[in-house]
Image 1 (cartoon, rainbow, N blue to C red):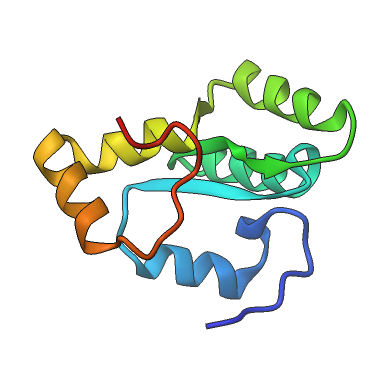
Image 2: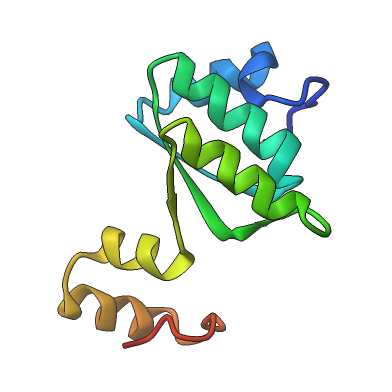
Length: 116
């Protein structure tokens, strides 16, 4: 599904907010471009709406110093920052499930350092 995004914060776009809510998930994991604007605005608005928000710091981007400034802004507001590797292992939880995922998805390229 593709939805138009006309406000910087995903949560400020009614169709996107409705789609997010419809998942029934309790945690929102954010990745994307413009760490300091779109990702930050989305994370902050979701956080203010009482959602648990995690931003994957190595799966977001802004040019120059803007990336680090955006991450600092998020951390200052209590928004969880984690790496792709941390997220992966948080999700699979055990060595057995990690190995099963890698075996089942052998065609997927692995980001450096993700496989233990």
